Amino acid sequence: MSITNATALRKNLFGYLDAVAANDEKVIVTTKNGNAAIISEEYLRNLEETCYLYSIPGMREQIIKGINTPLSECEEIDWEKELQ
Image 1 (tube, helix red, strand yellow):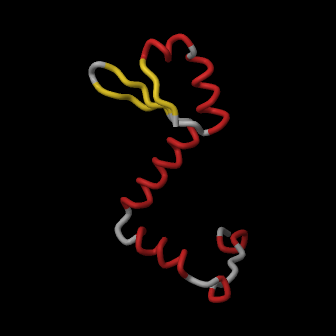
Image 2 (cartoon, rainbow, N blue to C red):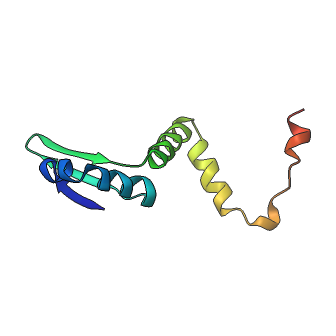
Image 3 (cartoon, one colour):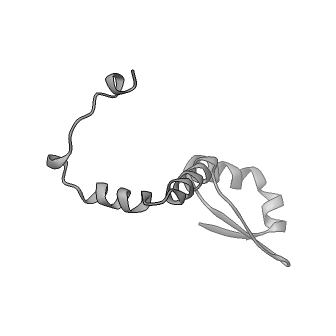
């Protein structure tokens, strides 16, 4: 994660944006009125998806249960058949 101020950000905006997009770098920009963050689109979409899933009642618990279930106890699903 990089921390910079607005003046330095302006001087090397494309460098910071490339680092964020290519390397999933996060940039904190400090200002007089508070701080801002620059994150990649992929990181933002992942955060949004996580928030959405956790907003569904019981989903968090089901995700944790799935993570803790041994693979040997899982059953394989034929998604093409299921979606017909």
